[in-house]
Each structure stands twice: as structure tokens, then as C-alpha cells.
Image (cartoon, rainbow, N blue to C red):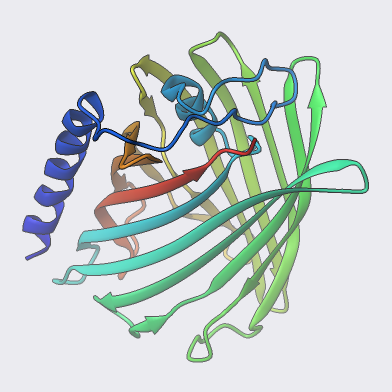
Length: 271
């Protein structure tokens, strides 16, 4: 069943690309995209610019991500699973400074462990333009589900990110989230590499979260993978479809071994 769903994701990505080349008449008019620090403004119809911003976690682009996480295998467990995540990203200004607010709400419907609402995380990144690119800093918080065995249900720490535009097509950087509480000391590292292929297509590292547990003194997640995505307009709405296969190299019983992430993102460029 999950194999069919993943295949359907590929089909939707291809079909969406064809639809974008022959859009329905009477679509919404094009509105300008907000100016991003250190870069020229672009029209909302500029799919390459929207694609660049959509693959940059420090860009001030409002988006609503509907993430379908198909977990095809686990270490030491003969099972598969599925988790849906709703991830809104809301840019705003406070005290004359650009902020990016992101919320991650996951819900597991199948697989090992407890099903239902999982740990919810939220961060507010203050974006500081630099001559070399953008730097972001702010707090990140995590609320563990009630059935979690974690000693602390609430943890908090700093989030840091930086993106450097190597060229008009290539962005590189990194993002880290750090959570601390009684019995909790986790650092997550996410590499940022995104190359714009043109016509709204982009090849990137995707959401690869390398996790280090300071209490255990060991890495608990070492994923590798890539993401292919395309920005297009469907019935006048700017959106991005992406596929992100991942493999976890850290062999821990119960840990995810391989998965495919299919994401539908609604983009809301400002005026």
C-alpha cells in the first residue's frame, strides 16, 4: 500500500510539471515576491526565484508544508510506518527585525511505537543580513507527547542557521537545533545545499537531520539522501512538490532505516 502511495507521489510530481506548462486560463494575477535581504525582488511568477527561496530556511517566504513520511524499513524491526507532518512557516517583523516562525506538528498513523500526535516543535529565527549571506538565531522548543518515556516533556535551546549564496543557482549553509532539559541533551545538524536546475526545478539535500545525544555521547541519526522538487502554479496557486528519499546509516534497534518523504508545499509570496 505504501509502495503505491510513493509511486503516486512520483506521478503527481510529473503530472504537476506538465500542468504547469499548460496552466488553466484565468489564473490569479502575478504578485511581487517580498525583497529578501541582499537580493533583488522577483515576481511571484518567477518560479526559479520561488524555488530558491523555498529551499532556503532563512528566506522570508510564507509557506504551508504537508509532509508525508513513508518509512519503508527499520533496524531490528520487521515493520514499516507512516507519519504526516503539518509545517507552517510564517515570516514577520518585530522590533524592526525579520523573524521566521516555524511549527512542526507530526501525527503517526502506522508503524512501531505509539500512534497519534507526536512531539511538537516550534522555533523563532531572527534573520540578520550579512555581506556574505544571512545568519539566523533564536529559540527552539519541543513539547513531547504525553505517552513519551522522556524524563522532561518540555525542552528548549538555541537554534542557529546560516546560508551563503555561492552563485545565483547554488546556496550552501547549515542549520542547528539544540534541545536541553532534565534527561535531554540533543543537537540536530542540517546541511543546506540547494542547486537550482531552472524552470522551477531544484536539487537539494532536503531535510537531513543528523542527531547527536550528549547524554549517550553518540550520534543517534546519520541520514544521507537528496531532494528533487519543482515550483509551479496549479489553478493560480504557487506550490512546490518534492520527493526526498533518505537512508539512515546509524544502526540502532527501532530506528528508521529507509524512508521516502513526499511534500506538498503551498507558497504565499507577499506583495
